[in-house]
Length: 262
Image 1 (cartoon, helix red, strand yellow):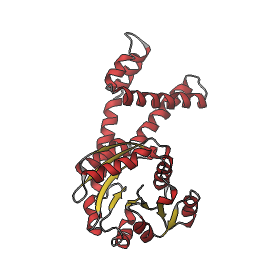
Image 2: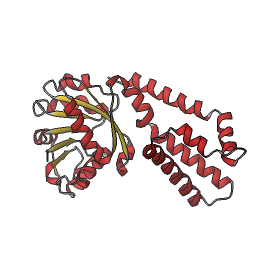
Image 3: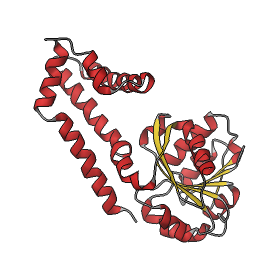
Image 4: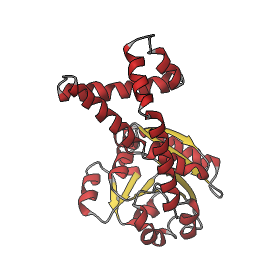
């Protein structure tokens, strides 16, 4: 198994570590660095090596940058030499392959956009690469992140759209679940029951789309009996601009992502 160095020990890094260990990777093949001794202590309890950024970069055959975008400029110069000739995976939103390669000119850089459900092993990760990174490098990244969800390879030019659909998308789903549960409470359900009913329904609907490959519009039509309860609800959503609101949210998010990138 390859050795992996991870720069940063936040929630994403922790999810990656737990996901990789869960697929059978030996903790001793992982090295995590962070400025927080407390975070490193928690990671070390899993049997993972911990230390400084330069040590993590030197240890890994693959190096994952799991730090916030605003500290990339502080971290990258310190690991430039140690990452020469290696595959480097950049996680930060808005940070382009070109920006990272400007500091790590001798590395093969692959950019990814995961989302927070990665924390529960159900993430969605988009992968982009440019030469000198290769298709095989991209496949390596897909293999790694498939341990904590699903992956798709896209051109880097589509990353703003990815941010808008899957990167920020969990927030839209949380709002939907909250609204559905609130409606249930309005109709007399206990809050706990309403939340369980709403969350499990959204989970089941998403799983149905993924496992059957059926278009959501067809699935919607399938549960709308003529003159029935579901079509009444769907009509109300259409009347209040539900689909339009979501589409506009994705559009605004993509525009904001494009404005922030470097």
